[in-house]
Image (cartoon, rainbow, N blue to C red):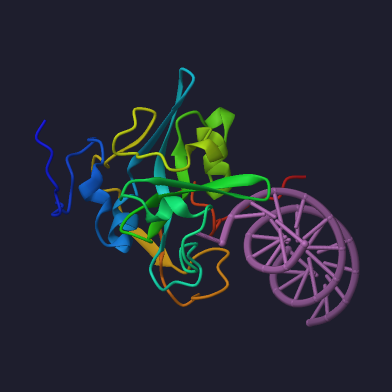
Length: 198
DNA sequence: GAAAAGATTACCT
DNA sequence: GGTAATCTTTTCC
């Protein structure tokens, strides 16, 4: 097929279409913002889990909080691969997933609306990965080509987006690199009203 | 009854 | 493991 290097991306991809390389090969903050409302599909052994992303964080170049900040290592190698690459890292007992944008930059997927609410609560990076069944083995997967792990663009305007500081980041707190759908119950951080049980 | 503080639990760049 | 959010208890008016 005619393979060409598309460098220019539309501001809005076709609704429900798979997100290709051009989508991710843009400014990380824009990707993070437009990822809201998009669907992340993960197929594992016949079962397919889907979440509609509602919360993301951008990690950019020169960012002390970014894993790529201190250079390439065996762990963060995926961050130096092509846009659309899945970067999965392990922290203590859970794993978190990022989508590589431009080189050395990525978007951390923090929360989504679950396709099977009963079986999980994809609110928070660790929980999201656990719900989707993502493992450390999935690190390095090219989501623009994989048939197991891929994304679909949002079908419509997801609504108002709230922007604020990232979660769990000690440095560069003043940067507003966290994006979330306002008034969405699945957003992890600013829990509107946790009801005390018992 | 409401608010503040301490302590516990859960989570994760 | 450290940190932040949550829950419980206590104090105050």
